[in-house]
Length: 87
Picture (cartoon, rainbow, N blue to C red):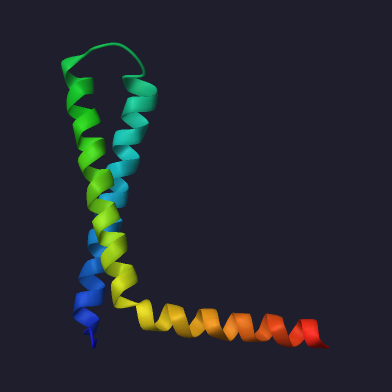
């Protein structure tokens, strides 16, 4: 599967934006609305859940795009480890 640089760029931007949203929502839920029932806390819990789902989808797409490279690198590292153990 050949993926253009533009697609990889936008996937990286997407993951960065969602990661920031996830971090902000986590901070707000941890520091600003730590416990109890507040309407704004409920909203941020939902934002946090959806951001978590969005970043999961983005990471899965990222892994799918780089799957061949991940396999090649894993084989390379395993080969290096096996050669070290033989010596």
